[in-house]
Amino acid sequence: MKPVIFLDMDGVCCDYPRAVIDKHGRDPDEVLAAWAREHRGKPDGYKIIGLSATLFWNAADHKEESFWANIEEYPWFRSLYDGLSALAPVLFLSSAGDNPRALSGKLKWLQARFGEGFQDYVFTLHKHQLARENAVLVDDYEVFVEMFREAGGKGVLFPQTWGSNHHIEDKIDYTLKEVAAHLHAANRCGSA
Image (cartoon, rainbow, N blue to C red; front, side, top):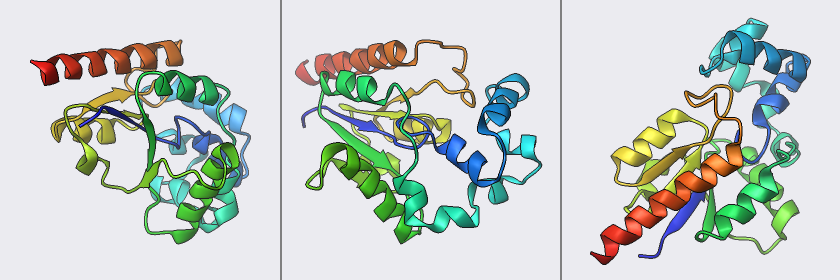
């Protein structure tokens, strides 16, 4: 099989945490700065605004298609996507839970950037089911990266405040180098 890069959307390509914080009526810059100071390396920034994980991540506003379709892309999105695309074909891989409006909103987000005929995506919570030797997952959530690796794929944790590699400053350079190294190693093993 040919190599493929699976690229997560929320927290890698689009600023889901900022959108969620905003929906809770808090200043995203203030909360994200506090997250970086007080909870760096931990996916528990919801504690800063005094909510449980369930209330923070599953707010009622998240049920609407427009929430998902209008999340702002990160400033690095295009350079990340273009850099990865130069290495191997890229498929967006994102979970949408059991909410059909989240799924349609994420699709609209992609179509707004790549056109209505765009089909290079997979929506599933079971990302590890797509793992194989020459597949690399780029994701900001360590659990998904570890599960993908355990299932036989390669995984790159995208550096974010909530990840264990939060100290990496050049997110794009790091990610591109890691993905290239994984693809090179998989190619060597496949041709041996």
